[in-house]
Amino acid sequence: MKLWKRIAAVAAVAAAAGVLIYYGIASDRLADLAKIPDNALLSKPTVNLWYTDEALSDYLGSVALDFSEEKDVRVIPKLVSGLEYLETINQDSLQTNSYPDLYIISNDCLEKAYLAGLASPVKDEAGLVSEENFSRPALEAVTYKDRLVGYPFYYETSALIYNKTYMEALAAASLEAEADAAEGEAAMEALNENGEPLDAGSTEGAAEGGPDAEGEGEAGEPETFVPEEAQLEERINAMIPSTIDDILSFADSYDAPEQVEAVFKWDVDDIFYNYFFVGNYIDVGGSCGDDTESIDIYNLDAIRCLMAYQDLNQFFSIDPDEVDYDSVIQEFIDGKLVFTVATTDIVGRIEEAKKNGEFPYEYGVTNIPNIDEELKTRSLSVTNAVVVNGYSQKKDIANEFAAYLTGERAQNLYERTGRMPARKGVSFENPQAEAFGREYALSVPIPKMMATSNYWVQMEIAFTRVWSGESATDTLKALSEKIMTQVTGQPFEEEYIEEPVEETEGYIGEEE
Image (cartoon, rainbow, N blue to C red; front, side):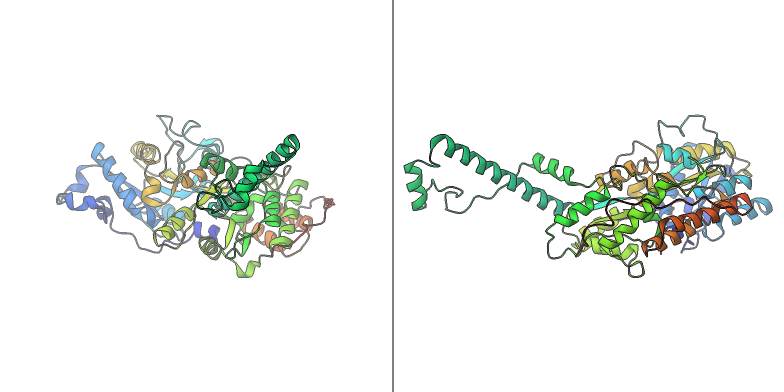
């Protein structure tokens, strides 16, 4: 299933009763709790928290219990269906007393929530939601019309994943070749200085296979080259591609092990893993994704990026009809790929495969590469926020809990749920998880404008057409005109931009 669909997918499991969730169902703390008094829910004010991601259940129950023990309030998390989530919140807020005081939702829904009165401006008395604690994309994601309307909680974005074991072998071979070359140069210098490569005694020893035999150890076996660890790590880091062009050069010269079927492969049929190609040059709603006056889809740089994307089909020949994200990740785990593009779930999936003995490699996570030295990339990100309901009668304590959840308790969010906290300064046991945070800090937040809600579907179609060989400028022009017609409410026509003529048509070779 495509990621943009999964973001809005229906939760598979029904919600447990609020009181039971509050008291930590499926947690080790349940056994230590005393019997709930008959008047338990009346003795303290109750704050209701709704969410749709089942992976958060135990974590939210634990955090809610801790907060309730510190404050004179009860927080009751409730897992609900993601189907018409915001509509249900709105209906219950208007017609019942069982609505949420705060809820968790992705940032692309914040305009709709705010205009419906379901998102109140953040009351951040402690100054938590600031650049000191959150990256620029996190803050922009929860900003609507210059107002903070949510607390950044956790995020999703994509990064470049590489097989470090393969890179290490290549780096070691490179260092050994350099050492051999240096040794050869030293021998030539000695020959030039002395008139002969070795003295008579050394020659005799070498001829007899004695201890002076060059390149052999005490047992007469060739010495194995072992690079220093720091030197090897430095070489690996230097080999990690910073551009797509670097990956192409790597593929051209790489003598791949037998099990490797492709140097670079990703899900070309999902916009989330493609968007980085144009993310730096397409503007949909300005930095906060909320400004209908700031839309720039059809421009020369975006066209050039799509042309570069199209050229990759000549090299990697990935069939969109035969690839999806799960199959690509499985190929990476099986050791069939050197590089891929993946979202944050890759870390947990690889670690699980390691435990099961299915991934006998080391791996690394790094920033999405630029296209070349001139054309830059930016990946797409989705930020899930904690929002205080505008209809809540308990906004103060709801804001206090939201700050507690997204600030003080962010440290163990990933270990407990597998969700990457938006809060800066969180430490991880796995350094690869931390690498996603660096990519998130450079990302483009998904826009929140209702007028462009179908932009992602249309852009995904555009990528598919370009990958299949259709004109980049014609495809992007049609997309821009469609979106601008929606936004302005009247027919819109872009001035045609000719596709630039590149010095080299496509790439030299095709990966075998």
